[in-house]
Image (cartoon, rainbow, N blue to C red):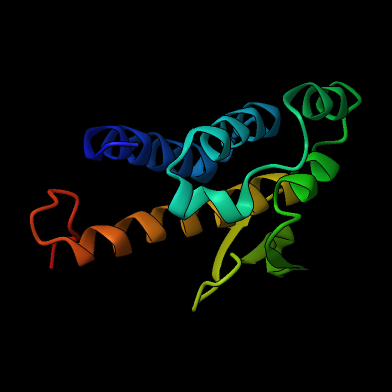
Length: 142
């Protein structure tokens, strides 16, 4: 994926993160979009975590109301942990293969928390790659 494509893809990851933060986040929509992002993202970032589940199998789980199972299938190539915090929040932590750091996200459902944590991992990987290339416009602002 060329540099412009990575920027557009990264923007979609950021949009997904914003949607994960909404109290009214639709888990099925988030999971479908996350699957698409994992399939189409840059190989150095997404290759190790490309979904083992097909789009149709994911949709079958979502149609059956099994959003949590669908989310677990999307993070199955990563190390993850789920816990329940105060006020009913679910806290998901995800560590991508060969990564140095895990990222956490909290939401009111397991599916949204896992989606947010994995999307945060993807976003941070993009930002780390951008930081290696000073000519890249996607550098973090200091």
